[in-house]
Length: 355
Image (cartoon, rainbow, N blue to C red):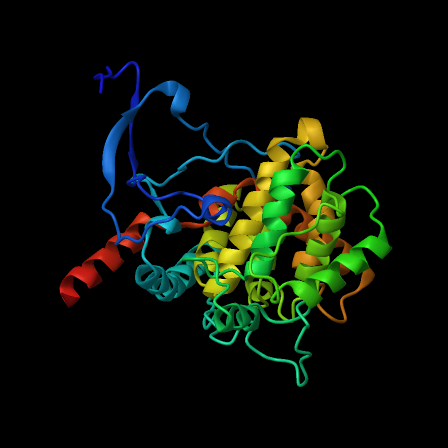
């Protein structure tokens, strides 16, 4: 490797890249290895590979969001895909007190017990054997396990992976994806076909009879009909404070990062893959017309629900906040699914001491 001078590069920190950074890589190509927590290393990157800084925006969030960077993370970040399942679970447990400390420091309030073990784990009283839409994610995972249909190394229902894979393959260049009106008849037929044949066919693939618009509509229904929201309900306890006007955007992103690390695995990984596919679509917005703002307008009702009994004025305010939050989730998804280096060092210390 050619040595770079200080004028040509800036010293940054990064984690080993021998494992794929995105769940999207795993879902599409199945190329993921196991590994223990890696230590951070220093390297030199030329200016062309450096990320632009995130300005300290305050709410309301601007229409144009800048690229993500390490921000104030002096020692870099670690993507969760670099960690073993054991360490990811430790990360989830350690994130709760870290979030409580962060929240009390920046918002002057205390918040506890956000790691809820039964998020998305309640079952309907009667479940049809073929029913797939409207079930909890963990029950779909159990269905996968029962017939050995799991996606290797992922806590994501195989049905969700199949739909997202189809949209990623066929929707990047589809004009009006998620925006164009769909055929309700074809969408209904697709959902019936999935529920009738998905677990009866070894390697189920969506028929060419359906286009990206049909599958996109079915995907929206799948997420909207989940028995527990993809973004589980405790976020509503802390969400309004994340949009206080005097707080910079980078702090809102930091708070969301802590919260996402506390989500149960099937919700966290499913949300990550969903956001990565949306982000890939917005990166090709010149062709398909789907922008980050469109994602906010289209998907806030899918990801969030308004609190019961709120007034019309309060509902309008919450709607604007939910739209902005959805935009942030899509645009900065890469940062939101990382383990902050201080927490990762704690995990490394605990693991080493237990040996």
